[in-house]
Image (tube, rainbow, N blue to C red; front, top):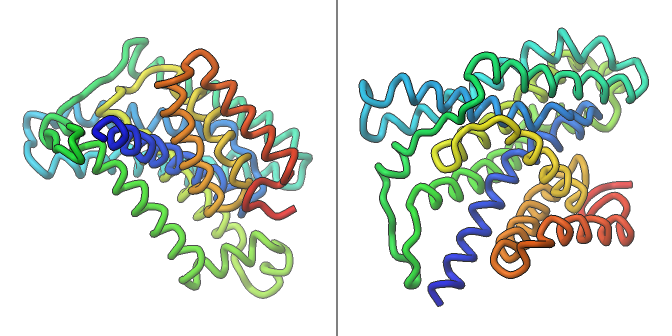
Length: 291
């Protein structure tokens, strides 16, 4: 029973991280129709900024206020996104998709080199937050409370995004712009501002994913590539542009990844790609995608 409980919690923990990353990727594509290849390194940037800020402030600060430092990485990446959209991406909207792929791939490389330049080749680590929270016993399994906090953050973010997109005026504008940008512009919607806001929110989600994983796995060069690949598996399974799909896809990938690590570690990634391939064969747009 304790092993089953631990595996379920591990699956939910991993699904929460994947949802934070994939939701930003799918939101940007859903509104702007951009496949942002730099999204994984924006996630890594969130981890680096959070690790750097914690390195500066753990000591002068202590106790519950330390958890506010998790927002530092997310806010920093959101600010970077608010600068990147109008300066780097906006001039490419009228060009073929290949230009967007090339520019975001170039951004991926630039971000990797920038993190190497700023923080060096060695990982940034800080275990202050997991140490502060300790562990609990759940159905016989001793489980870190920090991981439970990450699960809560992931599912709270899913609920908040759903509420913003489907229950607010801003969400109506987002959906209208994603359906027909020219019609929305003709009706008076400031499409440029909507694009900046959507890209900033997408970057915030990526940065938040990096921020919450940093106290456990640290910030290390190359972490963004692995996250990007898994985020693509999530959005392929769930459907590119669908928030519901991102959540369901993250849970599926989280469960398969956890079982894979335990029972078939040698072919864990192959099984994930096989699931994505089967979904594409049965539903080319993904489980919740629209053709």
